[in-house]
Length: 608
Image (tube, rainbow, N blue to C red; front, side):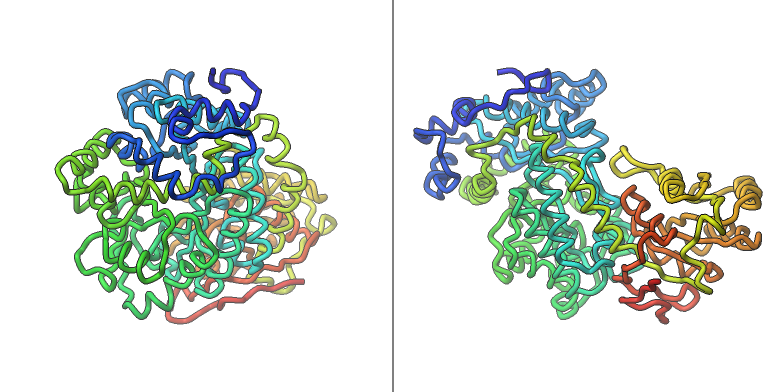
C-alpha cells in the first residue's frame, strides 16, 4: 500500500486494515468485516501483549512528535528535523525505529496544514505502524483546547476557549463543543484530545493556565469539564482532563520553571480535586499529569508527574481511576530540573504513568526505559499494565478494527455550516460586558459610523486566523460601520501611540483591544491618550479579563477571553447591538491598587 498523502483517496476496507496489521491477525482470528470492538476483551488484548518483544513494549509507552505533513514524503526541512531529532528522515521511519504507541500533532512540526492533509497524514502514520511485524494502530493526539491553545485551525470549527465557556456557564454548550470538536478530530484521524483543562484558576498571575481554565469556582469547573468530556467521548475521541493534581494556583510556567502549589491537603480536596473527580465520574478516558510540586500531597520534592504517592496513591487508589495516565510533555523544564532526561521516563512509569509524552530526546528516553527493564528496575509486568490500559482505550475507540479515516468524510464533518453556526452562537453567549457607563454601548452606524480598531495583535494559536484588529474591523464593517484596523502591539512605542492618537482624531469611535495589561504596560498609556481625545473608547480584553482593573477610565469594557475569530466576531455583534451580551465573569477581578478587594465578583456581567 502507498501513503494516502501522495494522492490516494480510497478508504481501506476493514479486511485490508487487519491484513496490514500483521500483529493483530497473527494473534487473533478475525473472520468477518463485522468485528465489533467488544471482541477485543482483556484476554485477547493480553494475547497481543504476550507476543510483543520488550523493545516493542517500550515503544508502545511513548507518544512522540514527528516532523512533516506526510508520513513518507515530508518537505526537506522536515526531513532534516527528523534526522536531527530521531536519526531518520520520515515519520514512518520514526515509528518503525521506535515502535511508537502514539504520535502528537503540532503546528510547528508542520503536521496540521489543513483538514484533508491531516487525515492523509493520519492514514499514512497508521499504515506505517500497522505494516510492521506485530504492528498496532497508533493513538494520534493533539492539544485542541480551543481559545488560545489550538493546533488545528480553520477551516476546522474553532470554538471559544474554556474561560469563555465558563462565562457562558452552559453545560449544553460545553457538551456541544466537545461533540462537534470531537467529530471533526475523529474525521481527521485524531483520536485523543488533550482537553479539557480541569484546573481551577484562582491566581490572576497564573502565566500558563489563566483563560485555559473554565474559571475559579470548583463546582462550575467540575460541571463544565464533565460536560465537555461527555461531548468528546460521545464522538469517539478520548478526552484528557489536565493537569493533575491541579495547576490553577501557580505563578510559574511549568514549561520554563518548576511551580509549587502551597495548598494544604484540605484546600486541595476542596479546590483542585473536584473537577478531576467529576471527570472520572463522567468516564474520562485519560488524565494528564502536571509538572508541579505539591508538598501537601508528596513532600519528597518530586514533581507530580514523577510522584507515586500522587499518581498511584491518590489518583489510582483514592480516586479509583483506572484509565490512561499521560504525562505532560517531557521536554518541559518543570519535570527536567531535578532529574536527567534518562531518569524522568523511568521514574514516571514507576509513579504510575502509562504514556510518556514527547521526550526531548526520544533515543535517550526509549533506551533508558529498556535498560531499566533489563536491569530489573522496571518489570515487564509493569509495562504490561500500562500497555493493557492503552490497548483497552484503543479498542474502545475502535482503532483495532477501524484505524483509518475516509478522505471524503473530512468534507462532511469538518468546518460545516452547521458547526460554524454553533460556534458563533456559543460565542455570543460568552461575551461579557464588564463596564458600560452612560450606556455607551451599543454603538450605532448613524452616530459612530467611522470606527478605528486598534490594539494588540497576538499571533493566532493555530496560525490560520487573525490578525485580531483586522477580524474585528471586518466584522464591524459587515455590520454597517466603516472600520479601519491599526495594529499597535502589546508594547506600543511612543511613536506608535502618537500615530494611533492622530488616527483616532479622524474617527467617530475607537475600539481598542488590550492584552494582559500590567502596571507598567505602555498599553495603559495608549488607552489613556485615546481617552484624552474625547472620542468614545470601547476596550476589549482579548485574553485575561483582569485588564479592566488597570484602566479605570474606560466607559465601556468587554471581555472575550481570547482573540480567536469566533470570539471577536461575537464581540463585534455585541458592540453593534446585533446581540445582547450574556456572559458573566467566571473569575473575580480584584482591584489593581488593592488586590484584597474585589472589583467585579464572579457572576458580574451587564446586558442591554
